[in-house]
Length: 280
Ligand SMILES: Nc1ncnc2c1ncn2[C@@H]1O[C@H](COP(=O)(O)OP(=O)(O)OP(=O)(O)O)[C@@H](O)[C@H]1O
Image 1 (spheres, rainbow, N blue to C red):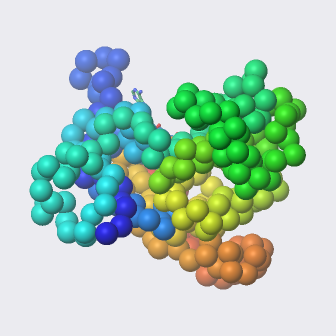
Image 2 (spheres, rainbow, N blue to C red; image 1 turned 90 degrees about the vertical axis):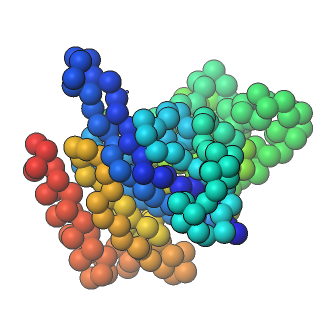
Image 3 (tube, rainbow, N blue to C red; image 1 turned 180 degrees about the vertical axis):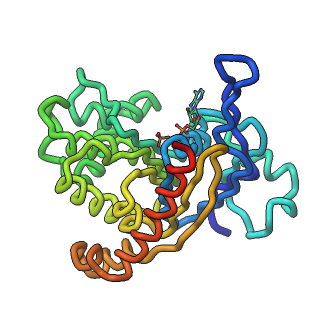
């Protein structure tokens, strides 16, 4: 039995400012993320990527359908008994799901170590234990030497790495990352992509990663979902091998310049551009 997060025929409707102009942000969305998956979501602006992430994190609830997180023997949801679905229903945020935002959302008045420790402090862990755990993840993200630095003393890439370390401290089953690298320069972005792949390989956490960058999506994921707007839904899915190849070869340039990578990049770009033209 493996751990799985399931989205069961979900829709999300946001009330419009004017009656009758509600926004159907998601409609008929089904998705299952299982242990070992690195799912990347791509799609035109407004297709519901963040809404989907907010559902998985428990920040919002679906208008219809449900989200569950649990261990399943593998039968389809219609064959699962209602009590197990109810037991596993995601009804709010939880320590089993860590979230990393595009803007790091760190506390500027706390140093790096205290930022990473904050969630553990709120959980009531003793100082020594929370610092030990925080240092483990600061070491994993290459920040151990910066533990006493103020947030403003760090580069954008380092700040995002603090955000990742903080999300990891609760030892979540799943990391949800909403365009975490969008604000970084190209070189730093590649470094942090590789770091996230390393963390995924070492920890085997389920990943759900939103990006606007097609190359990043292809490089990082084991599964790519493409979403389309109006209403937001999942329209295509591809399985990917490039990230695993990188972890085996450590040669990102060779992977990103391979004919296979370029052909898939062009295919995905044409799907997304097609959606953008329809909704422009
Ligand atoms: N709180 C809200 N109230 C009303 N409408 C909303 C709200 N949040 C999102 N929307 C609308 O729902 C749709 C989906 O938004 P969402 O942010 O999930 O898309 P996205 O794919 O993440 O977009 P982007 O790529 O631009 O970040 C959009 O039309 C958006 O305007």
